[in-house]
Length: 196
Ligand code: SAH
Image (cartoon, rainbow, N blue to C red; front, side, top):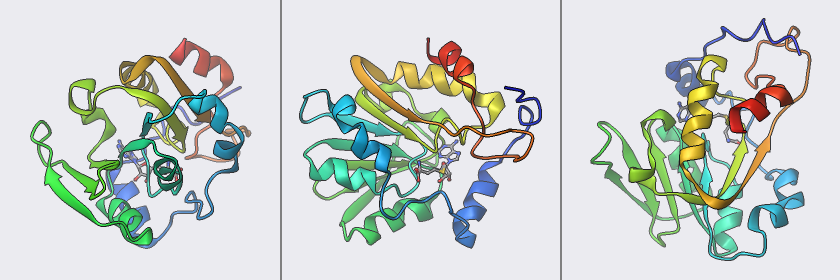
């Protein structure tokens, strides 16, 4: 668990926007993530009509899956291109509005009302803006956050969930000396100290 080589690495917002512009989005899974299917029962825990949060959502197709099951989804993503591609690839009509609390931010909402994607940095959100969630799908999110921002990210996520929420977290395990990330290697011990 020597993560020394990754701890100072920073990927800027501009670099993420550029990845989207260049189509350099190998992280996007057209067919959705098998682990969400596998652990769906853990996420839902028998409940219906949940509010589910997708941090650093990209254009994750799982957002569509969950709304098709009757849940509502809120995502946050800095790339407006990603957000627009999500709606157009699923042929979902949407409207866009400025977010009054966050300067420069916009929220894209499906006309049906059950998908809201905030286009801003996740660090601009708070529960007073987006409310609290019953479930979280964290794939390509904690592992995409710059190592120096992990504590801030985890504290924010904790502040955005209800008491009886479920949080599904997908991480990757590999030798951090062999790949600079993202995705970054986050050891299990660190996950425990971040989330308690
Ligand atoms: N969760 C998605 C995307 C993973 S890649 C999936 O599973 O496919 C990480 C995404 O986070 C990128 O789309 C990037 O543009 C976005 N991102 C990076 N930093 C961000 C930040 N501070 N706030 C919001 N989105 C961010």
